[in-house]
Image (cartoon, rainbow, N blue to C red; front, side):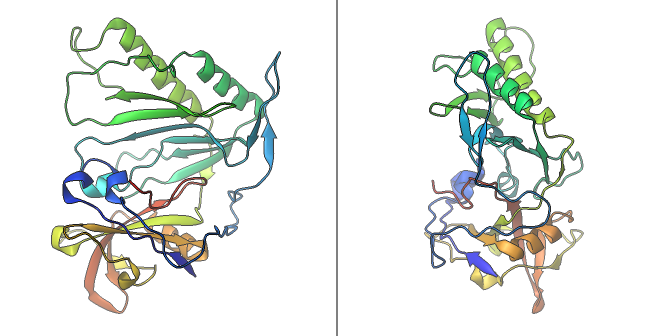
Length: 308
């Protein structure tokens, strides 16, 4: 079993806003710089081949297999810390045509990570998506999506990375509806609708996919002093590394600790976590000791415990 232990500081006032703040100020310890990849048998293991995506009338761009060419993520707003810890991109498209989308589940508890589905888009579908995104005009620096008159809602950020530097489009409270004159002009509303349509088109490439098993997961353990389990919420024996293997939180006042689990151990932890309706676990050696640990897949090409 290979476990990488980043050292994470998580300020209390920031944690409720975003998962990036939950796992801020990370230093890696002890396991070397290489990334071990374990074939989980589901066909999802990353490859190292490049993919050529033809464009009519122009040079054929070549993307690395793990290059994230399109991604949409929604996060922030006023949410519980545990909910922020579960945030994942709703759709991620790679240069080789792999598409990962979050599985829709209306009854998913706020502290349980969504599962991910994996599909493979054809060259034609990938070319069409990226071409539409590039021609949309939504990624220019001066595009204004407006600011709805609402507070504490999340922001959606779409990243497009083709042959040039990555570009971004961000819209606060995307999908929020309001009466006319509520802070959004007609032109801004059209841009917001176009951005949502682009995200939906990307999601459509992966919604018929199969469940994906990650070979890396991020486990966020919350301080028991600030995380109390209600009596009706079930627990289960923790299948991962011992509780004391999570890095000690610092500075004083941090309320959560982050650990990246890799290889076969990651598959085992994810298999258990993805089937549960709770993020509460007990120490296998002492069932009286319980902790709240949110387990989230780590996508290929992304950091497990990102720095601030």
